[in-house]
Amino acid sequence: MNIFEAVLLGAVEGFTEFLPVSSTGHLTILEKLLGYRIDDPAITAFTVIIQSGAVLATIIFLRKDIARVVPAFLAGLFTKSKRDNPDFRFGWAVLLGAIPIVIVALLFKDQIETTLRSLWFVAGALILWSGVMAFADHAATQVRHQEDVTWKDSLIIGTVQCLALIPGVSRSGATMSAGLLRDFDRVTVTKLSFFLSIPALLGASVLQGYEEAGNISAGVGWPNTLIATLVSFVVAYFSVNWLLRFISRHSYSIFIWYRVVLGLVLMGLLITNTIEPK
Image (cartoon, rainbow, N blue to C red; front, side, top):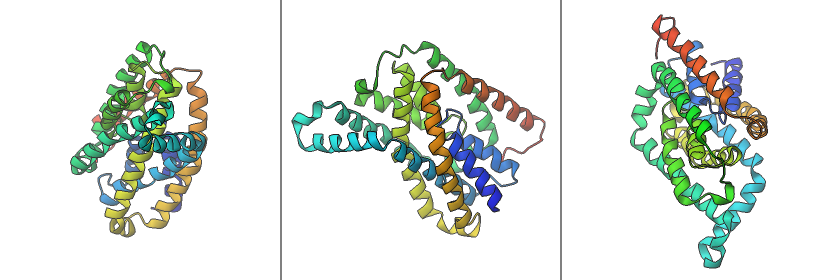
């Protein structure tokens, strides 16, 4: 991998990580077009590790919310009277919501890094989950807000988040759809999606960095991985800012149509053997 490719992949990761279009799906497609074997351990590890840049950008963007929620959560753990604070309930809900994807990712790690890396799965997931997103966007009443989030809501949303382990579904697309079907407004489900990404993606990045350090060194290279992570961080910060402003005034329809078109184009390329699925 050269520096230009590292910058390009980092920019795509940063821009798409929190959009409901599947960053892993986009990276998988682009890595294939650049000539990489997309189920190679170094490539799969690289794809996961550079997500940490986007997560760090989110932490900085949400720093005021985090500075409010974390102390309230810790205070509620030790003082019963503090547990009525909506920020304590929100923090507890985020923690519970992050658990399902950790369990599923560890149980099915091999399948996620090999079988599910096929571009057939990416194309199918892009198209099929678009239907779920369209239904959720149409059916949502949006009568609930951040202070209404309960542990039950977050556990349901966190469980649905597990589907994002299939490239093409989109972690944010899964959590946003589940949140809308729980009748939360779009800004709340988008911010909740950001919060749920922090433990899930940071944990995955650290694990991959530890387990695949040798493959990264021998393949992609740590300098390129760090460059891509830095670019991901910068681009994601502006992407998150834009998304929250956009979603406060618009539906998810533009993302839904984009997903369908991309999925159909990818499927056409696979059917005509223009590109190989792996």
